Picture 1 (cartoon, helix red, strand yellow):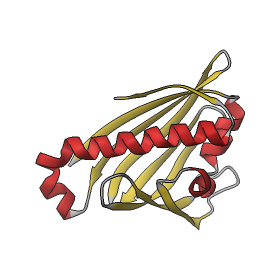
Picture 2 (cartoon, helix red, strand yellow):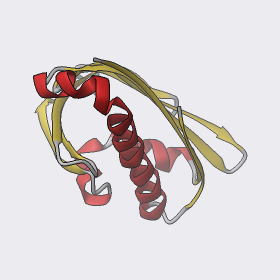
Picture 3 (tube, helix red, strand yellow):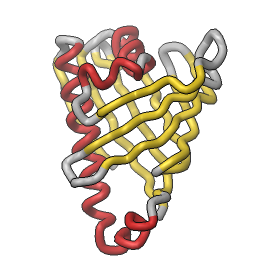
Picture 4 (cartoon, one colour):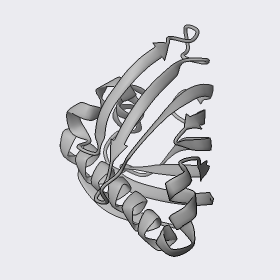
Length: 158
């Protein structure tokens, strides 16, 4: 089943600090409670292109998703993009901009699920899967703002 999610965080923090926190995903479990584990499988080049990390996530619903992300594009202070494989397959992109003292973080997630049980239940459970994703992203925005000692101005989900 295909999913398209967009989450936008508005955080009153310097773009450099926000980008640094997102870029260093090995540290996510320290501040984002939904991220159970991140393992580096391949380091990539000096900029991080080609790096592969395995992520294990848990939301409010009683299931876990594990997938690998291979970084395919990095623009410092602007964007990070990767290809997912595992329980979800597709593409994710973090993009960053500013509006005065506020950093705007946009996460786009275009994926399809691979577990048979998720695909069988998708017709009925799709709204719950979206709610679960949005909750994970809500908690991530709140946790990032807390970790940066910053104010979370707004979060939007599409």
